[in-house]
Amino acid sequence: MSLTELFLIPAICFFGGFFSTLAGLGGGLLVLATTSLFLPVSIVVPLNGVLILAGQITRVAQFYRHINWDITIPFIPGSMLGAALGTFVYFGLSEEIIASILGCVLLWFCWVPPSASTRNLAARIPFPFFWVGFAHTLLSTVTGAGVLFQSVMVNSKLGKDEFVATIAGTLLFMAIFKSMGYLAAGFDYSPYVGVIALSWIMGIIGTILAKFCLDSLPDTWFRLLVKTIISLFALRLFWKVGAYFWTSVL
Image (cartoon, rainbow, N blue to C red):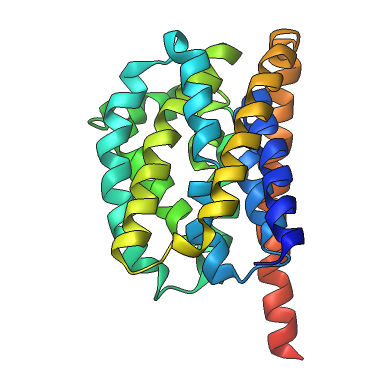
């Protein structure tokens, strides 16, 4: 790893920690998308969760009393199962198929408010956030970044502090499970210890600074910001799929 990358990646993690705290998402995606410009995807995807881990721990410490445990507790075992299966799928499934499905699901959950019939259907599903945790972590492990959980939560009745806190609490466990899965599958993190340590420091600083900005952000603008970031992520997925098929045809 070059000296430029050694300092550039922690700087990216600073902004990643900032955006994750301000909007409840976007930081991991920012780190993933930016680092993939100069590192191989095979390294970026397993490394992503570890780079942002310290910022997630800091966010949980900041918002701990706002965490909705009714959502978080069933999410955790679902996330564990999703990480185990996702690590296996990661090495064999077409990324274009996953990206297409994920993009459609994100836009649907983000912009289509749940109707009375869909709420009644969801109420009949036992432990719904277990399955959300499973699906979100599976997609995140395969594609490197999942926003399914946030797109489900954005239309919930949680306030912005509860939203950020619950996302932080659940995704902290997800990041740990994913990293353990990649490690068990044979990924070697030792060459990246230096950049991981610097990224943790910068992620913590970015997370702390963003807390002050979140306190002054109106709830309406907060939800609009979340929906916009999710939509941009979905459009990026469609662009990636389109570019793949375009080059295949040519």
